[in-house]
Image (cartoon, rainbow, N blue to C red; front, side, top):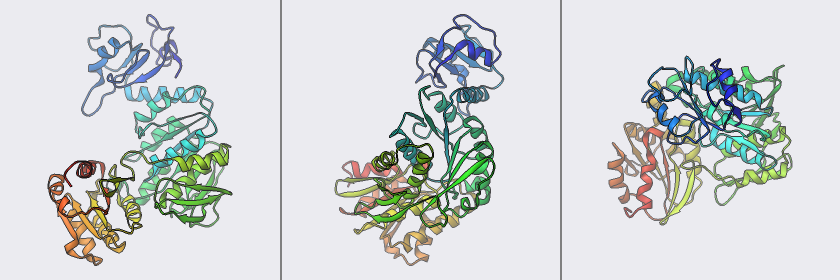
Length: 451
């Protein structure tokens, strides 16, 4: 980032104060990570108020602080605005427009972060790009990501998350994508939004902000396949099963390590991340790289070198156990995808599942359906933890799983106490649940001396 402080004063229509002819080198909302030369935005959250940290930010050599409250600041380097979050977003949009490069937005119910990392790898194989770090994909994370993009980047990849209607619209108005990628329309946040149809409406808010660009979709998704080219954007269709695809996976092979190889546009790709759904994610990335004229062979090799992020289908051999740590988050669709990975293993297969959250009125039925799918897939052992453990069990029993192979526990403490008596060396074990379920704590069993 390279903006003069005087330019920011102008943007917010504040009077220049001393030392305004300096460059701002970054933007911060957290004094724990602030650097000298940053500008600090005092964001008000549910559990904190950034205004209480303004003096600390200035002590840390912030060049200025953007505030909405007039309190006792010991320095005069204050820029006053009505709403600091809106100010952060408005300045991010201003900076984004100063960067004359294509922006790629990534949204969808599942696979956003993996697809973003695939796109990052494919594009980075040919030129320098800026990209969302981790999953900074919300109303503050997206602006902060934009400020982190260097002036010499040739493109930017921005992940956009949401919880409610209108949030994608707000983020897309900041990002203004040349290429919008939508991975799929699933059941994530269905408890808030009420139906897949409403989730589709929320995710496709991004379409209003593409101008003479591209919409890249997974056409294996029944809802996304309905989108068509118009005068604002060209629809690029990717997939495995659908017809009339622009980028289709051909000659798909399941490798011994449960990863997949496939061919797209005469480029052979061997993925390092397991799961057939990641073929779809990689196709989206390859299409984006092709649109932006990255070298196809370099892009294909880069996709193959990608490994999963922490707690996202991380597969490890730990003390004789094959552990699939997919504990970062869960919804019904991602549960099925993870079960599909587990069922490919030949040894005894164990699913350790926590609650799926934010399902609202669908909570009971989707936990039961997950249990049914688990049994249908031939999983040998179910260990269910949390308030929906009985619903997982009911579904598994409905589809014929032996009750002796189902174990339910109220909480993680109880589960960790007994799990060592259920699992054996050589088992393949899936660990998954929503973020609030903290299922990664089960990993302590395998990494310590408890087993």
